[in-house]
Length: 77
Image (cartoon, rainbow, N blue to C red; front, side):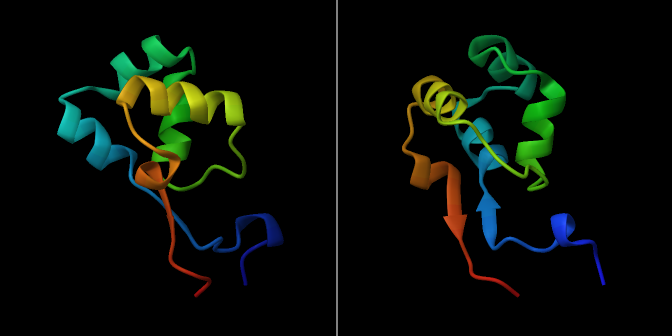
């Protein structure tokens, strides 16, 4: 059984899709948003435990998307 902080959370992150659709790299997004590539990679891979609203706002502004375009809920497994 995984530790409590590593349990499935039921949230899917669609950052790869949004970046691909916009022809943007993770490096470029990192520079525009002011968040490290490592932190964006953690988010992109669904391993983030939290996201600040200020970071979510910057990502949405940069990618011209809504939070629901970036995140979706599939329920707990």
